[in-house]
Length: 309
Image 1: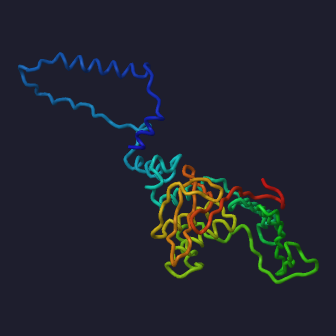
Image 2: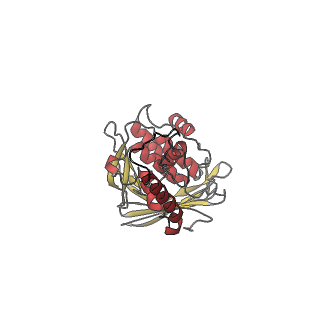
Image 3: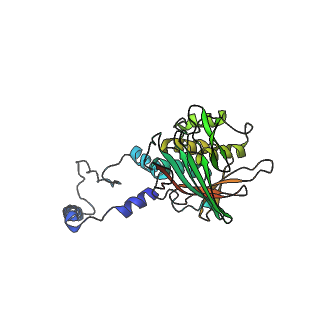
């Protein structure tokens, strides 16, 4: 019914000129039928003509299978995704699938190894900006601003198994330490939902069946690195299979923005993890819940440290 309503709203009414020919045929048929006696004196031996059947036409001719396919698309990827369904009654798995669909609509950008992932986030009154090396080999920078001041911390790149030593946020000249590159762009993560689900199980940080730990793992990959659209969609699709997820109405992220929250079950007194999504576009906003809150304010691929767009 929602499909029919949308088609009705978007389809223009035909003009009088377009209706003229059909009106003439209808009037002629009605006149001819009214001239026949109500009680015929001689039964006709000719077969009664079949009356034309009314047909539902959707943008021309649409088969039942095609109409069903259209409905499926509207359910998974409508303009406003959730329609008029309140978040309190939203299905948590469907919210995550909507987020996966939204992720696939973002332009796909493959970062170059020499670039940086820039991000800006907020936690309470404080903000954090970071420039992290795409391949992990170049020096990055983290700037944190709070009520007590501003701090800058250099993040040394790992080259040939060695990285500069850091003390007090500053590089110690001539001193290095063993290291392993930590790329800010995870090109190694699966782009298929089933493969991502297997990956998360194999790389889990908690015990088997610990849904709260699984939520923390999803959050780690979601906020700890840059994911291209297909990988991000696979992460959401895999997360949607977690049992006992709950949709939360009007939850706020670390910047006070209200959205639809997806809550992971809390175990052994651990704090509740709630991923917050925009109520209309289903883009990821940040984190809420008793485990703490934060907000993603900006994310971009840049050419140098200090660049923000």
